[in-house]
Image 1: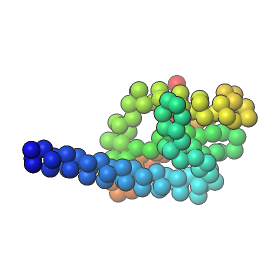
Image 2: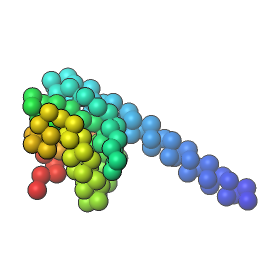
Image 3: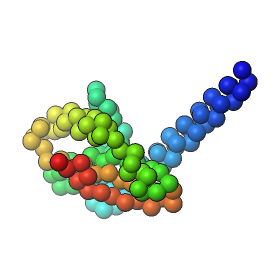
Amino acid sequence: MAGSDAAKAGRESRGRTAYHAGQAAEDQVSRLYDRSGRPVIARRWRGSIGEIDLIAREGDVVVFIEVKKSATHAQAAEHLTWRQQQRIMATASEFVGGEPRGQLTDMRFDVALVDAMGRIEIIENALAA
């Protein structure tokens, strides 16, 4: 039983570490968007379908940003699944329902890849059809 408890504690510790690393990556990406004149208007916005890491404005465009952190940018990109992309798009649709132009709001979906060194690669319009 003690081995089982140790394994559970190890998983919980890794989970907390990953959670905090993800938050730190989101903070870095948020600052990058803010500094570039694209203010972040929401963080971890939760709708009925899912959550969007960051939402920014670039003029009249609402930019939905998914942040992925891993050892390399390539590994981070591999973590974005088709199912997750669908959930992000559905959640974004829910968000723009509250915008003045509703579903006619101009939108863009960016993916921010953060590697172990904290380097950020932004892929703009990453979820375009």
